[in-house]
Amino acid sequence: MRYRRAKVAGGTYFFTLNLAERDRTARVDHVDSLRSPIREVMARRPFYIDVIVILPDHLHALWTLPMNDCDYPMRWALIKAGFSRQVPRGERCNPSRVSKSERGIWQRRYWEHLIRDERDYGRHVDYIHFNPVKHGYAGRASDWPYSSIRRYIAAGTLDRNWGGEVQCQDGYSFGER
Image (tube, rainbow, N blue to C red; front, side, top):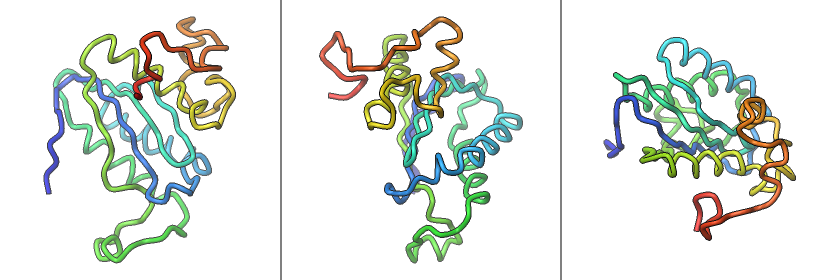
């Protein structure tokens, strides 16, 4: 089955990828095994990671692709495969995955959203950075070790205490209703 996905060369995209078993913590247990394939894919098929947060059972990222490129599905396929090869076996695998020689680490599909404008971009940056607080992994966003928020703090874009509580001016909580 072919999925309809927005593909805009040079676009900026928000992604959510989940582990197949949401009660597992493979992503943070093996965070270096995720960093390695990301670096390898970036070297072969360049893209920019605007924002990223890696949580125990899912991750969120905001990528900007090169001006002549819209192939984020291949990049994610390579990253997921590279991570899966490095993580010890032990996950449950349903018969469909076994028949296709797939691991049962990742959900097959992922959420993608083409960023429309600066406001949309800002809301997704905040959503990603706030996610560890939302899920109870950290008291404030800067306390979570697997987040790009440190880059924003170092650049002076965000204060170290940002994201310690929900503060929302438009009635929404970082992209959720």
